[in-house]
Amino acid sequence: MALSQAQPVQEASPADTVWTVLDAANDLGDTLTVDACRRVIDATLRGHEAAASDMAVVAAFFS
Picture (cartoon, rainbow, N blue to C red):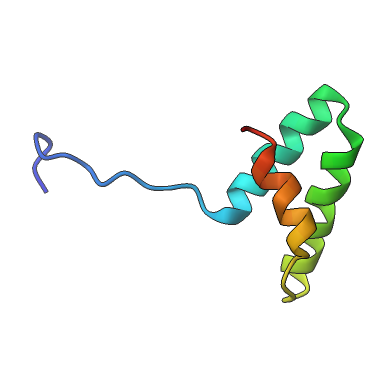
């Protein structure tokens, strides 16, 4: 690929997004969101689906 060609944009994975929200929520002292992020990460690491309510908290953080 030539340097002048546009590089494809990599989108953040859902896991990266949760870690970003966790970091920001932790900085702000938002314990509700921190706890939700931790549960999502824990479920993901265990191979389970995260609770819809926890995913809603994570998704709403930046909105």
